[in-house]
Length: 309
Image (tube, rainbow, N blue to C red; front, side, top):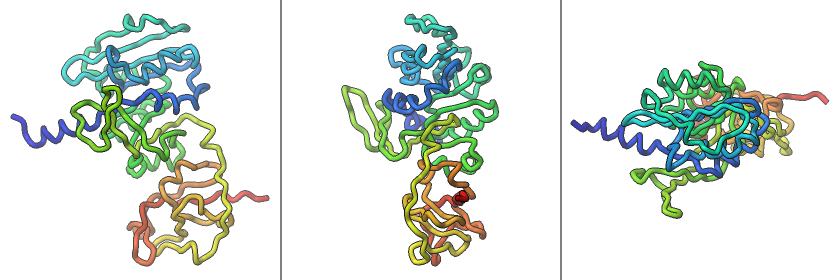
């Protein structure tokens, strides 16, 4: 019998299947070339490896020698049967990719024992996991101490399981997808918004996808240029926390060295040598930060790192 719960779950699943465009993969991974040399990469939430190849698989297979990979593993979940696996190790990539594809014993869920054994073999995980399972997915990466470069919903920053990792500099945002809409390939059954067709392929535009990683990149060390001077009129203090409100990242004062509340877009500019992340959203009373009784959008409390001249 099909219940309302079953229908909601089915809708959640079909609206959670976003397939990453090649340009999205390429635009981000080009910033990490040296990180992949001599490494085994695992794409454990991949698309189809046959007639519809995942663009993660396409990118890594096309650039196998260029990146200097030691190995490539991809697994595809099949909720209706056995999943698929591509597993290759060697100094030179083979053109006959199909001979390295085999059936899994199970359905290919990243949480299965079979896929966890493959996870243990790899050095770096790179994929687009289901947004609805993001907490569980990231927890597994840290449990097995893996490097990663994955796509997630920007709202994951606010998750109680994710923000502490960002605060402690155990994970951070990637280079691209920080402020522009991105298109993903979706199934015909997808019934979300901002859908369009191109060359017979169905796409959905989203503006809340970002890369999360623990791989270093140059943007993370770029210093944010500050020019505005602090004054009490333009920078009011919160009612329930000793920090000033800054509604735009570019307006962080250059001469203020105590706590500052900034939008979450700050993380696109975050340099851990320039700022310290203190906390997220709440004041001393454990209520949302407010000014004159009114709450701005969610804020991250940061503190500039003062450098003596």
